[in-house]
Length: 370
Image (tube, rainbow, N blue to C red):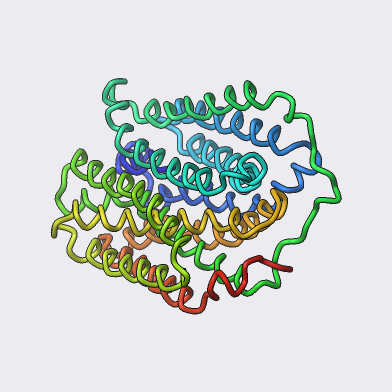
């Protein structure tokens, strides 16, 4: 999804569409990541966790292949977004259970690798998509499709290292309900929704924003890479700090409040030291995102309960957060700039500060309960 950002304006121009329509390329998969998340544990009970993960990687590969042919077709591009979103929707919640099952004795290391990998992948997609396009004659469809190599590699790795477990479904007795009666689960779901909305909106429109205020496409893409790349630091440091601090809530409040101020700077003073501003914004944004993603693993006692909690956060969080890229694109069409749309993101960030204030301390409620 982050590979879309550097070519968003090219897509708008080549396909003669509005920015609101272009925002659907990101909005569709994010919404599906929420809507289809409850299917993940159902499929696992009928098939197996590893089989479903392998199948979703194959589905992603097919979606990327479609993007190769989408240079002049919005319906084909949106179809690829739909298929990709469906695959990610199933795979995402299962990653918590996957980590819980295979890395129970090395949870901290596994969660760190998981969250940092997300930041690395997002950063590489922003930084390398344009060079790949230039090497291939300026065809952005080729640049978008090239990232299918990663999903193909994932299929091969799973087939090689997990051949026997692909046929082992989980017992029906392992089924658990979503923690719908847990206040903490709901607070974290809303927190995750706001964070997802900010992250995917920035991933989609940050390049276009800096292009509009006078930066070249190459410079704007570099700034987006700084934002994504610095997220690696946040994904490493903030979850680590949260595990060492007795009151995690205070850390979350401080980090999200910093993000709010940085987002206001991006919106209204984009020319002021953008590299530094985006570097710190990447640290705070990716740090809280990584922390939210890791909580289902840390706050559950089995692979199944981890997947269930992750499914709840994904279902409600991505549905609410997934409309953010569409809202930002619509706001840009209406106002003619990204100033007010990005101000909305700062308000969304401020809501995270408020949610964090009401979060109970980790020691007070160590587990989620139904």
